[in-house]
Image (cartoon, rainbow, N blue to C red; front, side, top):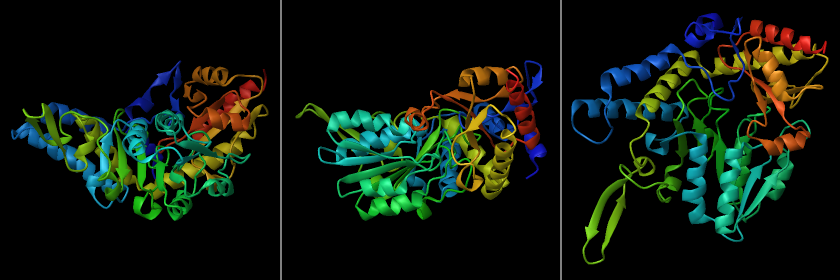
Length: 410
């Protein structure tokens, strides 16, 4: 890929922060937006703004067409069998909550088990902890090895006929570790369990094929893959989604609401998939923006995106060895991870490091990254995190290391 040409598509990268060129290394939190996505959203509001599936006038029909075409493009992007298996949600968090409440409350009870790993984002832990209190099922956590990789033997040992669903991130948002979710899905299905994949950090960076993975659910967010905030996707196998009740009630998710004077109640008939799970007016502009982001990534080629990121990650890990006070966590082999590097600087808190870098225009994350259990595994109070994407360069890594080396003098 021509990275310098790609950078021209991102207006924000021309900014200066504190008198320094902006270096954006917080892509695991959210990515910047290319002009193609910004223009698609602007064009929708300027020319086609109307509500979807609600009217026969021109603007509504145009909005509906744009909205559903985005769904079709996204379904092809992850190789879903049908666009009806892709549900628009606000993001990964809402997608997992939808599963935990809609599927979980109807299928889990005392004696059942849900298996999760200790590297999960809080959004793949907390909904299950909440619903376990409501339904009385048991949560089990698979261990993590010292290098931050998944302990597959421990996970497989904890699988049993009691296991009803396995919940695992394909890529850790703290270490960038790539999990073999295909292997785990196969093991889960052998005991009759479903497989939920948190794809928030994988779908933006690598080719993800839901049919090849064999997962029953996949959740991901638009804002982590060049799209806008407030839009995401839940993929689910049709046969599973068909049996699930709606997550929210309101407009759009029904076919018919009929009042009976005899009973004093309304009989409700749910809408078809995927609209059964899309109550109310959706984030239409967000869906259009995400569709544009998918087109942008497809043009780049996901294999190229992955290759660039792995190359940059290896370069950064090698350069960080020059910083005497820096300790990098997680596996150092780029083959095992994507472009996320957690680290600490001896004698400084992660927030101190992030603020120091901000003085030089370098944006990076500090704290728990919504994954406290994994930090407990590493025995860390918190960590600094640099994360890369398609517009980052080796020159930016060089500047990053130059700034961190100043901390060696403190």
